[in-house]
Length: 95
Image (tube, rainbow, N blue to C red; front, side, top):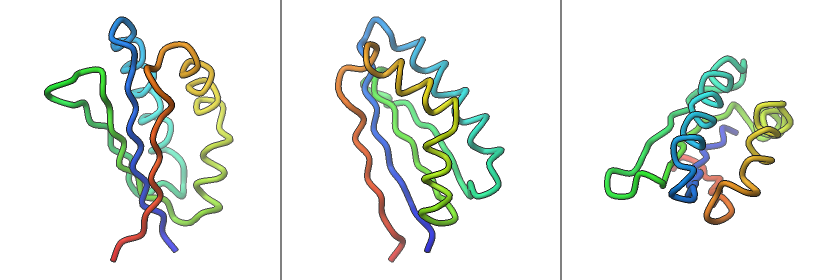
């Protein structure tokens, strides 16, 4: 079953550009993963420190493998100090 994922990320205002750069790198790498069907990054128009990912993965195993990639681990390390809050992750299915 395909996994549709929405992730909401809020950077600390003083780290917005650094976080944005890291997120854009994640887009580039993630789209190269075989099981990645869609991986889009959005920046909020009213609050530029808020980012939203919309992703579609082939299945749960593909998403698990994605979460083990070095660039995802790098982001997790950055998140500890550069984000306002922990990312909100919603795994959904298309109905």
